[in-house]
Each structure stands twice: as structure tokens, then as C-alpha cells.
Image (tube, rainbow over all chains, first blue to last red; front, top):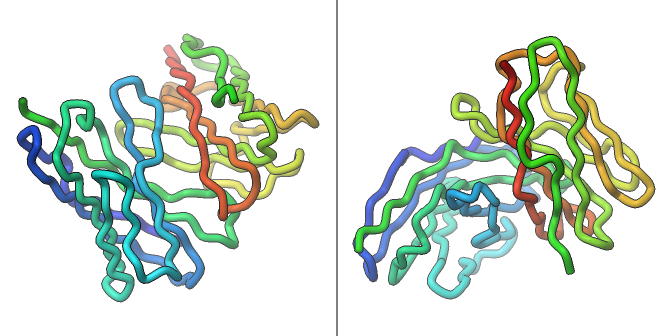
Length: 115
Length: 113
């Protein structure tokens, strides 16, 4: 079974600054995917970024980038130039390719953005 | 394309009743997954349907069931509701396997009194 752990319940960042969210995971599978999802107050889950485990290159989407350390089973998310609209819950998730679309989520990190 | 839609958005039920939630995936998507989100347990996978077949199931009691129709729309049913079933139920659709991105709906907020 997979486990995903987010050790930071809440993080605060000043507008335009950078914040890094931590995530560690555990799986015995070799073919898996990692995700960061954002859940704003509207509760709609939005995919922020996705990383295939077989790719060494860290994924980047505009102001969002990850630091994927496969050996350490670590998958952190960096939000650069933080904006007020980035305020939300952020969930790290792991999906095993052989398990279809089943995702295992971490407990979430609330991001507060101060103007 | 229209996004994933879920109906109803809010629901209040009494203990012991049953409830059916509906999820309409994005046009062309064949996979629908369901998740339960509670403050205590977080986000937990319920089940996934692909081409009308249950492909994967989470660790939930048999009171939780689902099905998928030929047009890929999916329903989940919870029988004999308990207070602990109060949650946000999210569905997500995908074109196919884990190689594709999942798109989430807005959720159905179920309150059991």
C-alpha cells in the first residue's frame, strides 16, 4: 500500500515571495506518478503539477516547480512569486500505474498568502 | 468541453436512509473515480469505474456501492447512512489509464443528521 505524508499543516508566505511545501511518499512500486493538487475554498480540486517517476527531470508549470528526489521518496512543491490566488489547500498524491486512476493523498497543507 | 458535473451539490439525509450521488464525466472520458473527503480521514479513494466495470475499490464497507452507465455517467450509492458518512464526495474523470490527467468535479456535500 502507498502512503503519502505532508508534514506541514499550514504555511504562510508573503505575496511575491517563494514557499516550498514538503511531501514524502512510500511505495514498493516502480511505475508511479506523483501529483500536487490545489483545493481552493470552492473545494474544486485542480491539478497543479504532475511528475512521472521514471523521469529524472523535475516538472515545472509556470510559477510552480517540484523537487523530485526519488531515492529519498521526496516530492516538494515550490511556489514562486506567490499570488493571493494561490491561497488554498495543497494536496500531494501518488498514483500507481498498475492501479488505474486510484490516487493516495497526503493530509494537505494550507497555504496562506499575506498581501 | 464542459467539465465534470456532480449532482446534487448539497444533500441532507437522516441516519438509516440511503442516498445516490451522480457524476457526469467530461465528454469522451471513460474512467470515473470517487473519493470521500472528511476533516478526520482526509481524501480517501472509494472506487473507480472504467467502461462500466469496477476497476479498483478502496477500503470502504459494502454500504458504499457504485455503477457506471454506457454513457460513462456514474452513480454512487450509500445505504443505511451513518453520521460518519457526512463528507464531501468528489468524482474525477479521465480518458483512460493512469497515463492521463484526472479532472475533478465540484463535489457533493452530504450531511447526515
